[in-house]
Amino acid sequence: MHIAFAASECVPFSKTGGLADVVGALPRALAALGHQVSVYVPRYRQTKLTDPQTVVRSITIPFDDKYRFCSVVTAGASAGVRFYFVDYPQYFDRAALYGGPAGDYPDNAERFALFSRAVLEASKVLGVPHVFHCHDWQSALLPVMLRTLYAEDSAFREVATVFTIHNMGYQGLFPPDILPLLMLPWDLLTISRMEFFGQVNFLKGALVFSDFVTTVSKKYSQEIQTTEYGFGLDGVLRNRAATVTGILNGVDYDEWSPQTDKFTAAKYSPQDLSGKLKCKQDLLNAFGVANGGAKVPVIGIVSRFAAQKGFDLISQIMDRLALEEMIVVALGAGDKPYEEMFQRLNKQFPKKIAVKIAYDNAIAHKIEAGADMFLIPSRYEPCGLNQIYSLKYGTVPIVRATGGLDDTIEPWDARTGRGTGFKFSDYTGEALLATIKQALLAYQDPSSWQMLMRNGMSRDFSWGASAREYGKIYERARQVRASANAAAAAADLKEEPVLG
Ligand code: ADP
Ligand code: GLC
Image 1 (cartoon, protein in one colour):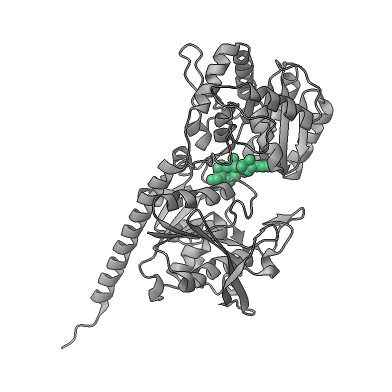
Image 2 (image 1 turned 45 degrees about the vertical axis):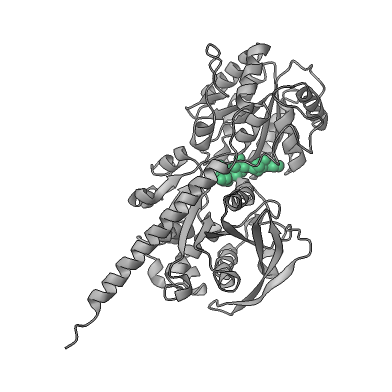
């Protein structure tokens, strides 16, 4: 089957978060199963290409004010996957992917509408797939356009769409007059389509028009059908519950394994954990923290700083956590209030929390390898990749039991020797503190702690199984499309005037 991915990020070409890891790895796993896979992403300033070749010189994208003309370049194929980049420097050759310190770029609707439409047009030249697989609000207009503007285009009649929600918290909300600018029909502005409290909601469009909707863990697929986690779109998902499912993300162990990691001070494995101590020392050096002795547990954090990630809970408990023998080492960047909060905590408790405000892949790897525990207290977490990396590095996760965090971490039970980490449910500082204390206590018993580490290291979250599940969903999406086409054809037939 030919599957074309359309997404706004893809490792190694562009990244702000886990979406990029998924779009970088899942296509390769699908290609290994024998599928033909193309990946379309925008060509940003940070996209480094060796020897790019132009494969579509000019695509006309009509906007109401004036036409825009973009092109498509390829960087060739890697591991059986062909990568295409939509090139339109006016929109994508910018300092960041989505916005700067002043907020989101004001023309994000136009930028990603152009991208979605360019993918459809380019595919007519480069190969129309059996399935378009779109991700998050940035490529959400593709299924919308396919069923509206392109409904009569015979090139796409049989083509199915699968849409994956990586995060319900980002929906792409724009004022109604964006519709005429993008030459989209006004009838999209109805409650059953894209209207959302008077605005146009790109994500909602994809949830309405795609043949199948997936999200990145089973638990999150259930949570987003509730008002608590649905960000106002839970009803839309409940309406189509039969074609919504959760498929857990895999991870790429070529990038994230303590046995082969290029960024760490030493390699180690479940059989020989000794290198981890060197990694811990190297991590403390990188953060300029005096060695409190190998016995002092290090709690690592690597994160986008956003409300989703639950760090307000740390601020609530830091004065009490500081009384414990431990040190927190945090790497992150994002929303100003959280950056400032971490800097403030570092000033207040310099011996207890070390902080780097940055986006730095090498340091992220050093934390995964050098920390003893890894903290993710998220308010909500569709999947989460860092806790899965942590398991492989024997860095014991402490997580809130939500979304993919709940699906991937099994609670440690010292009596049975089973489990891989520590979880709490209530979104409160008290629950977090109690759980961290439980982990610190467990750390005091080195032999059972090593069993806990090895339990996690033995877990396998590679992509193979999830890629096979996606394969089944692509088949189902094609069936949904075929039935919809058959139903439409039957309705047309009924409307034919009876002759004679
Ligand atoms: P999300 O996509 O919500 O940010 P995930 O856990 O799915 O969360 O993925 C985050 C990815 O981004 C991981 O690969 C993580 O290592 C990386 N990452 C997040 N913040 C940073 C940072 N400050 N520096 C380097 N890598 C980061
Ligand atoms: C999102 C989610 C994260 C998930 C990632 C990849 O950014 O916040 O939980 O792991 O997408 O699917």
